[in-house]
Image (cartoon, rainbow, N blue to C red):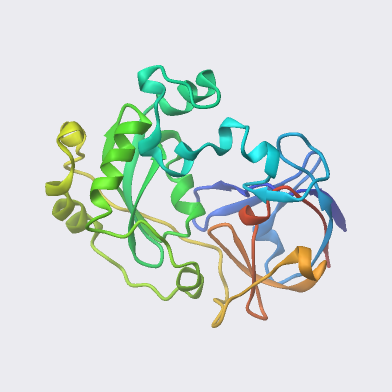
Amino acid sequence: MTYQGVLTKMRTEFLSPIQYYLVFENDFLNINQLLNRTIDIQFVKYQCLNCGQDKPIYRQGFDKQCFYEVPQAADWIMRPELSTAHLGKEDRDLEYEKAMQLQPHIVYLANSSNVKVGVTRKSQVPTRWIDQGAHEAIEIVEVPNRYLAGITEVALKDYVSDKTNWRKMLKNDIEDENLVEWRERLAAYIPEETKAYYIESNKETNLDFPVEQYPEKPKSLNIIKSQRYSGKLVGVKGQYLIFEDNTVFNIRANEGLVVDITVS
């Protein structure tokens, strides 16, 4: 059977194992049900997630013009400390920025390739951890807006990484860490503005990914360059499809591409 649609971030359910869904306009695929089956992916065209035009995707599923115009791609998305909605100051669209920034946010530790610090809206826990391929995570601070989360993350980045090594994450070349001890060690470095929001007593969350075979040497699939790929699906972790021949396909990095997916 063949499905066609524009790629967007896979939706997930926090179960054991995590359930993954690829959602198109008129259909969806439960990716877990496709394990050990051959998947054929063929590039069809571009479709910008904002304007819908067939224009080359620049970043985050948007063509270049839209990327520099839409509020969903503003700098504060990647750098929360740049948030200004709490000051009533507009970046690209104040109403959107208020809706996104002026809600509870979590500063967390996640262990995917190593222990890292990150920020997400409270409503996105544990989805954010799933998307990063973290096998364990814990909340450190819960604050009322994105700016406070951002300045906390900046302060903690001097003592813990804020990056994930995607190859190491996919190879499952990781060690379990005591995230409660990490949280307690980092508490001393939380800035004064957010010390009152420190979470003193909680447990780490463990995540179980549907992977039957981890790649020894992950090879990232460039579907635009290759146009077509076929392989046996053996796992899903983060936002990556993992195939038997060590090929991995990052769905999120390919948002805005229209593809045909054939399952046999």
